[in-house]
Figure (cartoon, rainbow over the protein chains, first blue to last red):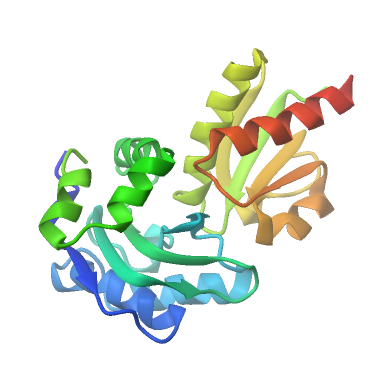
Length: 144
Length: 93
């Protein structure tokens, strides 16, 4: 469906805090012109206000904000850090960041169905987290 | 009687949708029919908006103010959702 491009899949050095992790995970979307630079701040504000609801499972975060918080086009980027990053407010941490920009309430839903199915299998998640390089990581998600 | 379930997160389009999808799967596995499930933002969480609210564990206190609620640690694990739903529906008798 073309919501994930190879160049938007990356493996990065683990940053010191969750705010930087969100900024790094949104950067490909920003550089590709899919979101405005304020989008990452929107995600951070939401989490500061409401807690880390973007963590959808152990090790996995789905950073996203409302379309009006700076989305230009619907698109996804995937960032894997080597270590888990702690969030405040809940005993929760994540190293796989699936950053989502949705320009409306519907255009991203098919992709989320596939991502959720892929990540509901613990063995698959283990393999994804062990990806040696970005090309390997991309292969798990390329049908999205 | 639980007839309407609202899954919600802070923005109403990511986490909440993932929950909706897996809540529907869990209901099907439990053989529970006739329940509508949708997803929304925290702003729609008010008393009477649904018979059961489902959200991430950190938003549970907000949900409990509006009614019966379940907080999840893992939104992609149908098993966790199924166990928690079973408890609530059995409690309903």
